[in-house]
Amino acid sequence: MSQNPHKPHSSEEKLSALEDDQESLDNSEQSVRKRIRQSVPGSHRDDTPKSSPPRPVSVEELMETAKGVTNMALAHEIVVNGDFQIKPAELPEHSLEKKVREIVHKAFWDCLEAQLKEDPPTYDHAIKLLGEIKENLLSFLLPGHTRLRNQIMEVLDLDLIKQEAENGALDIAKLVEFVIGMMGTLCAPARDEEIKKLKDIREIVPLFRAIFSVLDLMKMDMANFAVSSIRPKLMQQSAEYERKKFQEFLEKQPNSLDLVTDWLQEAADDLAKLRYKKLPPPSSAVGAAGGAAALCPTAIQNQAYLKLLKWDHTNRPFPETVLMDQSRFQEIQLELEQLLVAGTVLLVTFSAAGAALIDVPGFAEKIKTIVRVLLTGMHLPFSNSKVSGELSCIWSAQSGTDCPWRIRPYSERAGRDCCQVRSSCQLQQDGLQSLL
Image 1 (cartoon, rainbow, N blue to C red):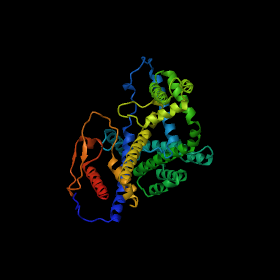
Image 2 (cartoon, one colour; image 1 turned 30 degrees about the vertical axis):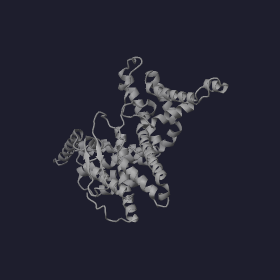
Image 3 (cartoon, one colour; image 1 turned 135 degrees about the vertical axis):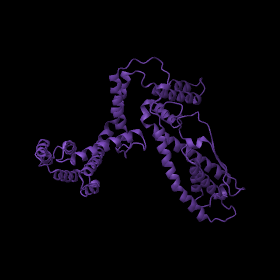
Image 4 (tube, rainbow, N blue to C red; image 1 turned 180 degrees about the horizontal axis):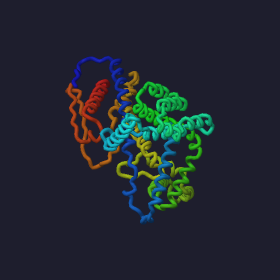
């Protein structure tokens, strides 16, 4: 990508170029946040030496503990994340599990189609599907929906449907029409378009498949509605609930919170050292009284949380009680590092040439934008710390057109392909030129 250094640029064009780059920078930051969440390790307990061997744990206790951790993590996410929603699981493309599921589903629907094409038709599979649809519809009802419950029970009476099928009097199209109408009554307004599409499908097998697909969406809507309904109550009881759960874990496994103990002890030691440095000479009565005073628990807690902002997530296990928020702490740590660098650059720049830059409109914003571009993708946690390499982009104002860059495996680990690296180089080049 070449550029003529002697070509004049107006200040408006430079500012417009930086504003255009801002959108791509925001998208890159979202990608960084996503990769931070994906890179958070689930557990590091195997890396921590134990002061004493843990007691044997039975399989039942292990399963019960795992269930408790899952429930607590879900409740914690609902409380902390106001945008939390349950979403359908999406299997990776070309994965074995996805291929197996597609093959099994295709075999099932092919079998149903073959049964319905027999002379006379066989409705064994179709009746089972109607039974599942009936259970799904009943699960959407509230206790006060007595009339709708009676209507579903009456129309989708499986015993009566079996008798009609045996006597050749089953009108399956009429039953499916009732199901679609009931789904339209119970679904959220956002699903009206899907219900409308169901009415346009004429063949029975594709219609059954579409019905179950919409029912899955309705289940998701119902689950998310339940989450939003219980969130206020969870917010009132979340602290006590998590305290109770961690106490149960501690009683079952006394060394289950060793990392938390070490973390708080380090914070207390740091405060003690800081206080010792600030104390007056030992001969002073005030100094003796200050040294005898105990450390405040709130101060220890505050210091402990400050240490999390400089945590080595790659090589050091995270404390157990804050493990569910590790990705959030990593995002805050990344933002803090970027803020420190931007502030340092602004301080040095204005200290060196403050008088000449005071009247330049938008200069500080330009500097912050360039710094954010330069720091995009930096300080990311990697699963393999032994992988070495480097990404270097060198720009020379004298050479003008070329942007020499070399890529080693590090760029692949950072998840940035050659096009992204070249784009980053051009952003750096444009940003630096705007200051010259």
